[in-house]
Image (tube, rainbow, N blue to C red; front, side):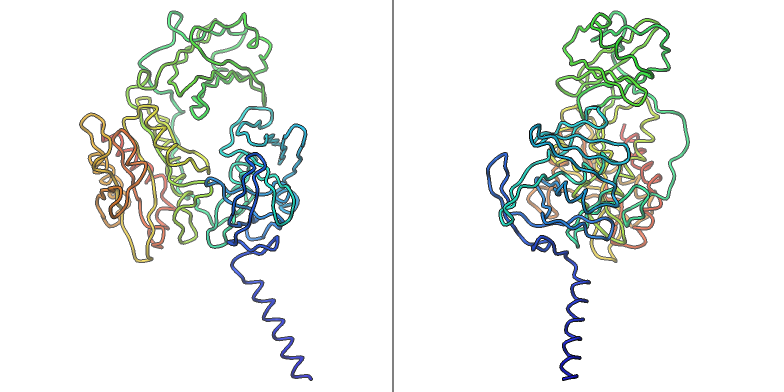
Length: 485
């Protein structure tokens, strides 16, 4: 009898240990990686989805509704993120009559609407990468509100990353220690950001809109931002001048645009929205603010698009505790630092946060603004012994004047490899349908385009160098673009 009890206890203990160390979490009677059926309430269509989980760092956020991926975006139950992810500090409320979803955290209030990318953050208009949706979990016979995890996390000041092994989205606090890439190299201290030079200058005789300044408002209290992702120029004015700027008598509009005024955090915002991405010129004198716009190619001499590979739910390559999407973003932010201080170039970025623009969105941005150069930043992966720097191009791709993708790749590779000192793997022609496979951002861009693979994230030495030297790598890419001119 004692022997049978010992065997029983041993078996029970082994089962407990097995459950503790299983790689895939179990919840809602469905383990991550298993398939389940949901019905989208707005389309009335039923889909089979692979279950994914949400975690606060290493702790599973329990939910009776599994997460799933929809159009490359990880969707999670808003209710359970707030209820069981308590350390994230989230609150959640849904109004069934207005279809409004309200989530709050640390003084930030994000109000979303079902099936819409339009939202407000602290009362200010913002755009979501993916609309929240309502789904009917067939086996549970219940409806759930699902939100895009990465997008909502970013709006509410949380960090988000993807762990493919656990099939989990990892949520963490801004100050929390994570296994994602950090940048140990510091951005150099230098002068302030400068506005790019324009071919056309706004003036009293040439403007799309003229806005009368309030009495006593200094020119230094007025700044502007080209919010090209939302196809608008945003004027930021220190102080509350809503009454003045809302009055139609204080503005004259010559060219078609949408004009709106808002107030937040001690600043009045004037949003000038156009039908497509435009280049803007702004001039301020003692009486008026003048703004004119035109197609980017008509406004700027040198236009560049810089792409940070992967992002959001797409982590890219993973190795040595690092994610490709974070390394590429850190490097691109360093590239931006240098271009922000060079008025000779107008630079558009496919992403500057942990989001995932589709591949088509990346090359479409470049084509729409008439870019002269397209640069995509990536990190390689293979075996632990694989090493080296290489740059990709497409031999039948677009070109700018006489500069081909290969020509641009040659210059970028030279600057990049001389900085990393990694093995020189040279250039790779990515021909669609052939080994080593085509790359959409090289195939469909209409200008000279290249894709730099800095090094191997799976190589410990190279991974450590890339993590600690993003500023130097960013400067190398920047110098490559400049040298191509």
